[in-house]
Length: 362
Ligand SMILES: *[C@@H]1O[C@H](CO)[C@@H](O)[C@H](O)[C@H]1NC(C)=O
Ligand SMILES: *[C@@H]1O[C@H](CO)[C@@H](O)[C@H](O)[C@H]1NC(C)=O
Ligand SMILES: *[C@@H]1O[C@H](CO)[C@@H](O)[C@H](O)[C@H]1NC(C)=O
Ligand SMILES: *[C@@H]1O[C@H](CO)[C@@H](O)[C@H](O)[C@H]1NC(C)=O
Ligand SMILES: *[C@@H]1O[C@H](CO)[C@@H](O)[C@H](O)[C@H]1NC(C)=O
Ligand SMILES: *[C@@H]1O[C@H](CO)[C@@H](O)[C@H](O)[C@H]1NC(C)=O
Ligand SMILES: *[C@@H]1O[C@H](CO)[C@@H](O)[C@H](O)[C@H]1NC(C)=O
Figure 1 (cartoon, rainbow, N blue to C red):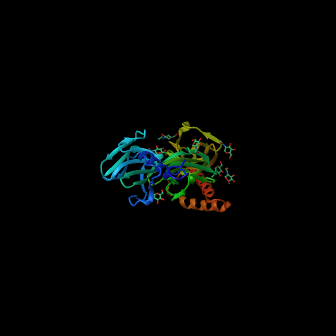
Figure 2: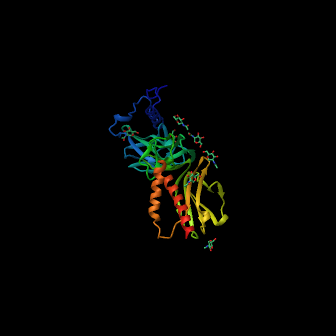
Figure 3: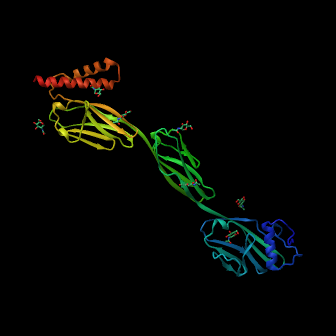
């Protein structure tokens, strides 16, 4: 059974079929459709956003006898009669110039071809509108925050939907990082370093808007000493030995004098930890306090120690101690050819002994 002479169920065939039924045009009478009529307009694209109100407008004139709006092959309105059950569709305007229907809260499923069919005395004509519905991007799935050890291979993902298909990019929110790291959903960080720790931002963009979400990447690493200095303090003065260790998670500190562990509050010594810094405070330095201290910083990934010398600072300026200090330092450095740090530490320790001796003499 072929009403319009085509077996293929194309929209055009269906539209023509619908119109024939609607206007009860005898099957034998040719129905002009599409491009052959001078009245017909080239197909227009109407781009809207999801949720918008859409007005589908069609110009008509007094010649018009019957008219209808179709969604693909389905009749939405025939004249003033509503054929569709869709509550979002209503008649906006129907007069002798204009025939307009309204679709509220337009959705992606509404995308497609809409046809205004007009039956005049002479011939039917159609106006087509291709409705394109855009959807803002939404990041549907993004990796949760991760905590890994330095050296691990990290892979994070950000999946977004939207229409047109959003472009997904990754960025490292860090003062030193530049530009995009990845222009796709997956971000691979092989053998991650501590510098790569921080917040990663995924952004999904299309013509409509941009959606942004963040992932925190924590990189754990064992402590390393970033600052620890020897300290010269005269007897009776207050002195603070500072030991700073960078680590993730934050390091725990322990202090030792020679092999003995120092506990907070004993012998007028206080241990205070503030994040990466540990401070050993001597409220009233005595000669017994002078010596070689060890600061140990540890976390679940390891530990590190460093030595700090608390030495006596000579306040008596009659002695050429500065010169002596330089000589000793040079000796210390030359002695073993090791790092100058050890040399300085050794010389400082010697200086301390010298100071003690000098103080004992007078
Ligand atoms: C309508 O959009 C399609 C792609 O969706 C495009 O190929 C076509 O050229 C557009 N037509 C007009 C008239 O803009
Ligand atoms: C248009 O047709 C499509 C497919 O049948 C349907 O999903 C959509 O809801 C219709 N939209 C309107 C506004 O009638
Ligand atoms: C989205 O994430 C969940 C877990 O958060 C996962 O189970 C699911 O497979 C993910 N979906 C896709 C498409 O990757
Ligand atoms: C990281 O990936 C590389 C290459 O794929 C592999 O050789 C290495 O073993 C991986 N490292 C870890 C910690 O999984
Ligand atoms: C420091 O200790 C000495 C001897 O132990 C004592 O004489 C002196 O008063 C103390 N100084 C202070 C400020 O506590
Ligand atoms: C410090 O690390 C060493 C290995 O590097 C380990 O043998 C030792 O037990 C650690 N000490 C503490 C107190 O965690
Ligand atoms: C302090 O002690 C450490 C070991 O506990 C040692 O390696 C270092 O040489 C000592 N420093 C001085 C100046 O004696």
